[in-house]
Amino acid sequence: MHSDVKAAIRLQEVDSQAAELSKEVSALPKHIAQIETKLAGHQRRVEMDKAALLANGKERKRLEEQIQIQNQKVSKLRDQMLAAKNNDQYKAFQNEIEFCESDIHKHEDRILELMAESEPLDRNVKAAEKALSEERIQVDKEKAQARERTAVDEKALAELKSRRVRIAAEVTADVLKEYERLRKARRGIAVAEVGEGRCAACHISVRPQFMQELRRGDQVKYCESCGRILVYYPPQSVEELVGQQATEA
Image (cartoon, rainbow, N blue to C red; front, side, top):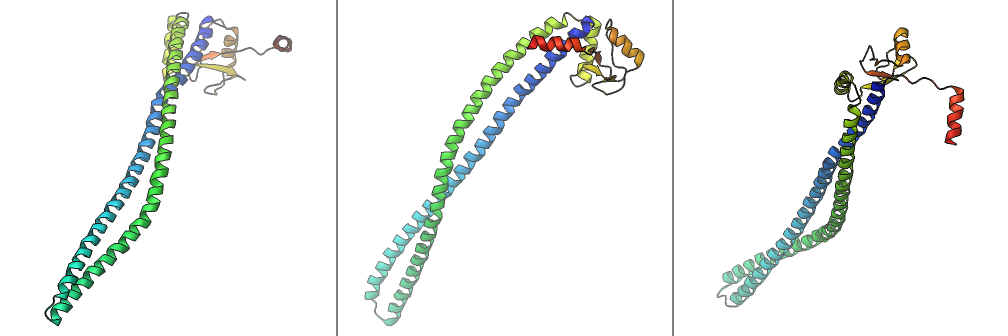
């Protein structure tokens, strides 16, 4: 196999690993943003539940104050009713007392409704606050893991970059230039293997004469269809396979 092809294969491996790591590094901040957005949404819902519970309590307090005011008013009206000079005044005081007492009953009924509403609200707030606290711990844990993973990936990327520079120095300038062009044009895949007479990338058959030249391995060959650098691995003989298995054993 031509030395430039061997180097191109190694470049392809390095670039593929770097692409995966870069993808992971860029995905981690998005993941953090997603879980933080989710956490913020839960926080808003908890605040809404707490606000509803607080409003419930304030309304009950307001109604209780109104009841107290109405009770004081009824007490005064009863005192004034005792001093009524005629039947009309007496009935007027009585009607006003009945109106105040009716208002008191309405307030008391509403307070009971609010008390019934507050119980599930209170339970929801307590449960939501507990869940939110647990979620914050999990989010902080995931953020820490993401930072650690990013540091590991960035270190690996730096090592791959250094390795790539060394490999690229082994490639002929024209072949390297074509490799870089193909990598950009072919979604990162500049090298393709030939198997069963076809390019593994574009699946187009290779001409017999072209295949003979590729087998010789004395020059860099490019796919006549997709333009990728082609790699040919001769099939192993039975003796080679048996020897390989014995070595592995």
